[in-house]
Length: 214
Image (cartoon, rainbow, N blue to C red; front, side):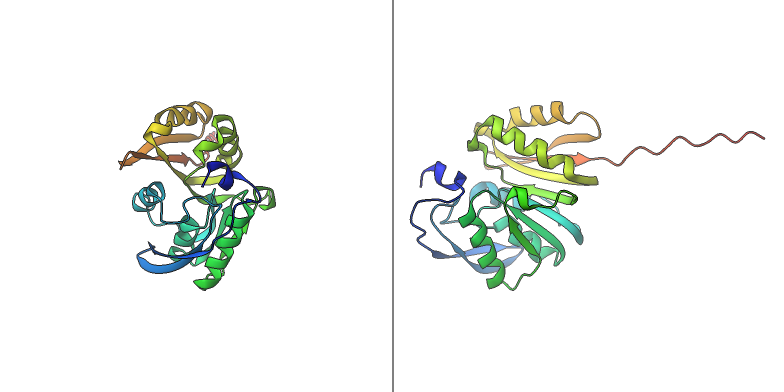
């Protein structure tokens, strides 16, 4: 599959639906995938590293899976936090259809699979988990992160997995330079040539106490 297919809004390649056995959220599951989306034949290595090196999500709130593909991160979050709402965001309509099908197969009713412009602007996120589409190009990737990272709630984290030879270290430096105030950026884990980057949004500083003159 050419990389341009899973960046397309409406892939022209044959769907070729298939069943896939995967382990998500500590469970052995069967999901549906198809051609024209990212990694249709297996749980890709980067996503596996991300899922293995991030903490359990908060118990509730809105979560974001940025660049969801057929939905392994979304499904894991929805299984781990049934009282949360997971927003699976992708530009690929076929990928979004697969997320919806997989949510239905697994009996999950806490998933919204939508295009970026369909996420209400007043929603902020308790966590962001993403295997971002590095191959869209640096400018497009940076624009995505500049759009979504500021929507983290205070004292909340975004977790991003990036392959080392695809620029994880330079992305970490860019994140630190782009979000210097109110955020911190750290390399949380390294495994199988991948880095997991953690972006933390800190709470607003407490206001200065008012002096009492006696």
